[in-house]
Length: 269
Image (cartoon, rainbow, N blue to C red; front, side, top):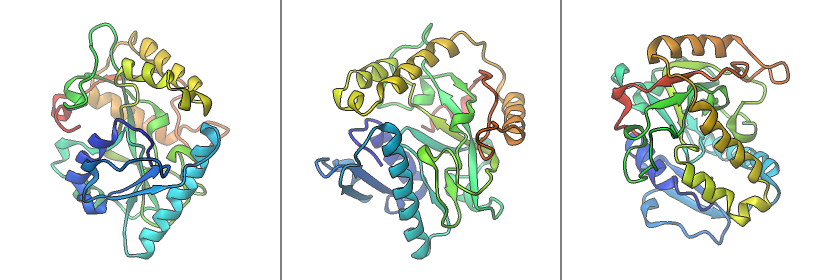
């Protein structure tokens, strides 16, 4: 579900190539939204704008998307993926499988998660992002952030919590070789533009955007580690460790673990 989102064209291009345009569903938050030409072939629908602040609309969106997923299951779907427009579920190229083939081979569980990789602009030596080129060809570092280890994939009707960060009443299962790349902080200039958008500030986005900008500065000071041993350790840690207030969410207890993203991912997204 989107509203004035600059990531959507890349989202449609990536998931359309992996899953087929006819299998994509994009809900535009507000009937005032114009459906762009690049959504041709996609199930693109404008709905009445959700009202409330960022927390309230996040919950409304999760309920709505859970209901839409249930409809798809009733029509014969065997798996439904929900992400934000700046989130890309990627199977490790080393596995030698496309996303659909990879997901189809997973064990039969209610939901599946990719390990969250928050891709941030490294302020000391990376310039503005070019949205027409693959992000991972321009960004070399990723923060293994438990907030983006989301149960994005469900195999039966379930209810997502706000932001798809959890599935109510279910555990999460982090699939080996599956990653959720989050690009919300891929470009500092974009973050600043969003922070200056009066429509967003009125809905309570200011705090969230300032937090993202601070993350760029803090993570930029962390030394990047080797990919393979680090993702193996962090996946193990997130599988076992839970915050007391949310036992069906992963955590790394505030550790900022940054990795060097391997060359094999460069041209995927």
